[in-house]
Amino acid sequence: MKPLVALLLAVLLPSSAAQAWSRPGHMVTAAIAYDELSAQDRRVIDKIVALAEKHPDRGAFEVAVGRATGEERGRRLFLELARWPDDARGSIHDHPTWHYWSRPIVDRSSPPPQSPKDVPEGSAYEAFVLNLSVAADSRASAGERAVALAWLFHLVGDMHQPLHSVSQVSKRFPEGDRGGSLQFVLDPVEKKPITLHWYWDDSVSRDGEPELAFKRADDLMRRVPRTQFMLQPFKSATEFSEWAKESYQLGNTVAYGPDLRASDSASTAPEQSKRYVDQSLEVGEQRLTLAGYRLTEVLRWVFRNER
Image (cartoon, rainbow, N blue to C red; front, side):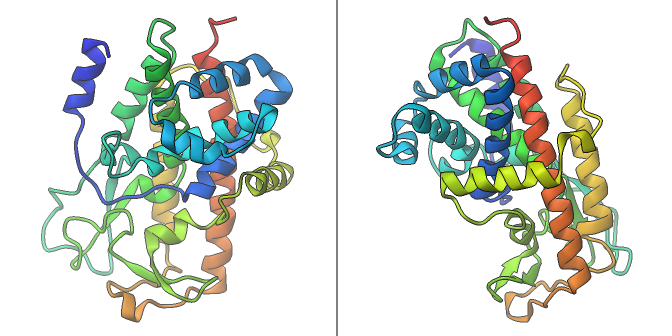
């Protein structure tokens, strides 16, 4: 590993409790990018799959691939890149604070006794800058680039989940609720208590089968087409901060909006109104699908000079 890369890895923060889109959600975002690139820029797919074959955490990738061969093997490798940072939790590859870039909002109905000072911010932006540089460096080893690509896949997805950009500060949570990880709601599907953060993580897709990820991607691309957004080719890492601002606004107005009902105890987790459930699903689908389209552009940029 290059000295600069090692130094940057060492200075990034070491701890957090936040998760991400659920693993199936990350797989759907990757499936959207795969379908777009497969139709429009196959060379990028081929380069990514070749690098994924060199990923140093072979166990996770071999489990994901199973006995698949040919095109199906490539598709599964592609999806595993997106979910691998979650699969690697607790291992030597884990970087918990890379999953979020959080800023506080104050619960005006129950403000904290003083201004928040210690709300964990996370280091997703620094991680994105670092991994973008490594992934695009043709001089880096295949293993280094494969790890960096996996983080790019994952970070693009993470920063489109609203609760990865915001943490509510209140009298109960003067240092923030860790992006909803300390508040509980009733799961509208299984009718069990879950954290507000996990509610949003799981809002779009719950099945981790590769074929179902591609089916869900096809469905979302039909209902939330690329033409719905004014997308431009990716140009620089500063765009990541704009994605974070979008998520912050949605976290403020929707995730923690006036329709939310939450408890700080799992035993009293309340059911959400139909309005909140419908609105969170709509926002979740739009954000996850947009993440797939933007991931396509990021990957094109990474390999823009390689033919």
